[in-house]
Length: 314
Image 1: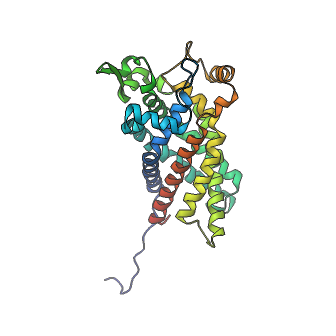
Image 2: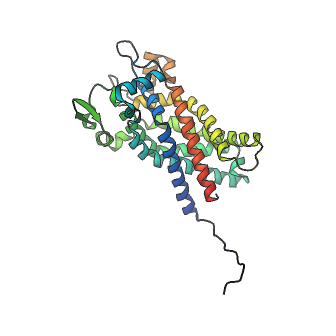
Image 3: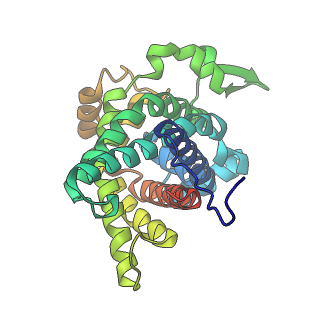
């Protein structure tokens, strides 16, 4: 017979259960963030991929690009490639957020501190580890997304990736996958690594630092509140996104179906030709839209992830 007033003890979840929960939290956080900011990402991709036509660029800036997409393709044009992007961002964000969280926890334990007070360099190592691991999911997702986003600007069909409907080529996600094959889906992986590893190296330690500082400035103690996590992540996202924009421009050009003649051979060839034909400013095309997409994306994603972790009591 149970003793009256006995307290029911809940055992600590196993590492496997915690890992699965973190992956699930990261996936939900990523899907939420991407769904909200996708139209801005469309504008960013179009700006970075545009090339002069008769000596004139198709878009004069972000607002002009936004208006022309709606005028020529309708509101649905802003969401071209959203579904395959969501399919890719689910494992990508799950891996990125979970790996960063796990490595931060391990490094904090080794340093004899808490993840919130982890030294910046340790946080940078955790972030870089997350950026390195995520590329396995990021690269295929990015290629399909980019090719769908620029499809309406292409004047020719993309091999088996295009189906002619009403006289116009309609690019589908599965068509692109079949056209590229497994090897093609990892085209530009070095450029993706050059963007994602430095981004995570900068973003995650800055995010933790800013969230904690904002929390303390408003009189808080202990772990940062969810809103402070949102604010800190957004500010860190702007800094990291702007810093790696040149790598993002090269990656976008390499992975686009709209290639010059002759096509880019590799990352160095792409960078050299951009510099020779468009000058150094071309490496910062789409910086503002990229900051406007990446900062709130990671702000929302980290906020959702933090909220779920707090609900689980971790």
